[in-house]
Length: 574
Image (cartoon, rainbow, N blue to C red; front, side, top):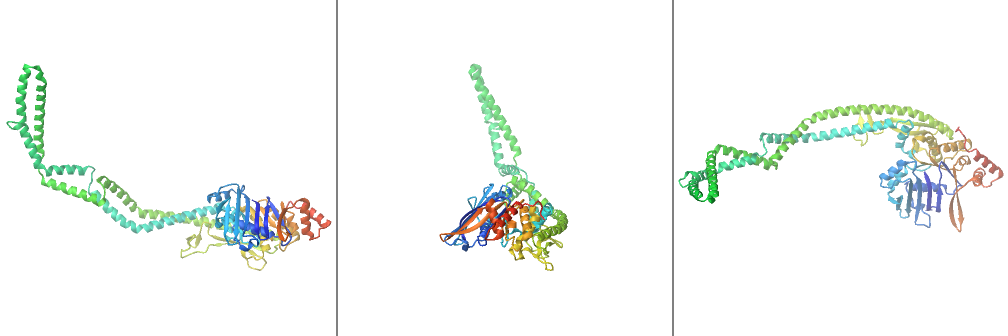
């Protein structure tokens, strides 16, 4: 809800601060007082284009600031938070326009872009009249409003979910098909590598064992010489170590018989002789196992050559090549299941596409039924606001097919083209007079006529829109009497769901206001002052009387004004 609007140096406005209330705010004043400037100022804070000529003649820049209460619109706080702005209950938008054409935008004292302000402004207010900022003129909104009116949003969301599912599955299939040729060559390489590693029958630790065995065969002669010489010198030769130790042991044993102190050397010599004899036996046994075997050595050399070749080729150790073999086996298995995956994916796509067509067709049929109800309801409202004979149609037609498949949005399924919103193009059409063709809303030329059309549509769709503030300018053009009273009553009813700002010249409408703002201008010391005052009680009676009787206010017009204000709230709308 718009709480305040502050304006500086905009056209004839040097400085103004306007406080708005809940419900219906009516703005009245003499022709030329500057009521339309308030709409222009509001357009600026909603992100519309600015013009340098709007700046007051003696100023270099114009500034507009709006204070907006977001308490009843939490979704707007979420939009702000997503854009990096603090999520608060109060929104302050400030926009400055300079003569050089530069714009400065601040949202809660933080700089923002004009494009973000425009996006945000579309969720804050609608201005109905000869203005561009009207969401009902955007055809994309018509589908959303029809679905909300008919409580079809859950069905539309199911279509959106199925559309995303089909699109994702199609993209997944396209990726698989793109990879197919590459996968064929990759499979051949993976199969070759897997077979090569498998044929090698690799074993962990095998290379080290082969290197040791190879060393024995290469140095067999040297090892035999060591064994033979060592055995002889330790045991077999006449002057062997064993014989020498035996002779010494006998002498020491003799000494021990004389002196017991020689017991320890005797024991050590006995032990030494035992170890020497044991070593000689081991050398003799080892000599029997060391022998030259050219065939085995050749086998070892070939096996080691293969291992070294594989290690160089794959830049991996034996352990890593065994792991690679397992990885390749899994990759080959996945590649072998490619065609099966494609078949399963195609079957899933067929199922999802069938569900999508069925769901979108059911939504389309429901929309056509709801559209017929909406046509009648809005035509009834149009008659009540002085537009007798005006026809209204919700045009529900199929989205044009795209046989080429080049369209960037939507999915072509047979003769149907379906996107997240369904298979329908939906547009609100108007027929101003019987016998004329129905035309799109944006082709209605008259600002007042368009405002009343929007009022009629809004009253029917009032609970189908989440905009907090609606502005009606020229809604009273070309009407009077009972029709004006009917328009006022409908604005009043609409204010139960929206904050309404209505610029009017008709007292039949003004009396319905919850807040009455009088716009005027005064010339002081050669300068024009722009004034906006809240009028109540006697002042409001005088303003209604002025609207009734012109410049001269009589007791009769005052009494009439008082009576109109007392009867301003009919219980039913006729």
